[in-house]
Image (cartoon, rainbow, N blue to C red):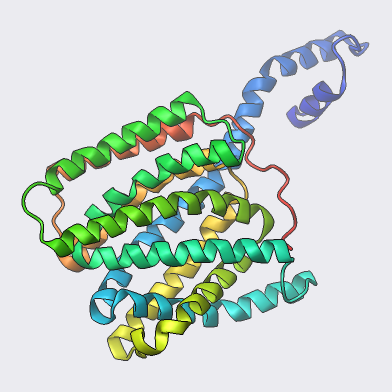
Length: 344
């Protein structure tokens, strides 16, 4: 009897209905004794792919932040965000149509799902606009550090609105990661700031609050729609929401500016699809703490693209951030997939 067959038989047979063969009875008893360990290993394995894709998506988002900061400096945050999403619509429309045709679905999702796409797009549009405007006046790593209040808020929102149980270790891990952000901030925020820099920090903090709400809405959205649908409709709706002001605030980009914005669109679409897939298959408390790893990429991108130095204090903070993430991930003991509905 193979281990898989023994596992299945142990699940089906009650303890009192042992087989005639004593050796078989002993093997069933042995399998029953290791079921908790086996089940925990299976749950950990089921979370591995969502965790890997979330990390990849966050890395892509961080590179996109650097690209969009450069585009925002060159053209303005409003123009950069409008044209990035316009490029995103062009990129995702053929993929969306191909997937819908292959799955035999209609062109539009159900009205309730469409409203969810619109709500998240509105949140994301304002959130991203504030963040990119803030990065014009704030170093990228510093902006990312400020935004790290979002995952802690999102963990509480996940408990309040999604009914997810937040374990003590997950909370401790998030607080440890936040302490790492505090270490970095202590070395960044001393001295005199120009009014524009203060306004930039306020914009990023407001963006972080919206991002916390966005993380929880993202979990619900990912349960109802596929990653291709999420990426297409978010690009479409943000583009439409920004369209009224585009005539005055978003001149057509040319040359290097167009290349920057197109690159940002590709990175944004890839990130949305990766993270959308992951959030459909793992709970928010598993994935939200991974948001802290984005700082590592932001520090690297800021240094390479804008010459923003990374200090020893920053590296110490990153060590705390990574430690906190690992603590929070290790605390998960919940099955990853709750029977994800077929995308509408």
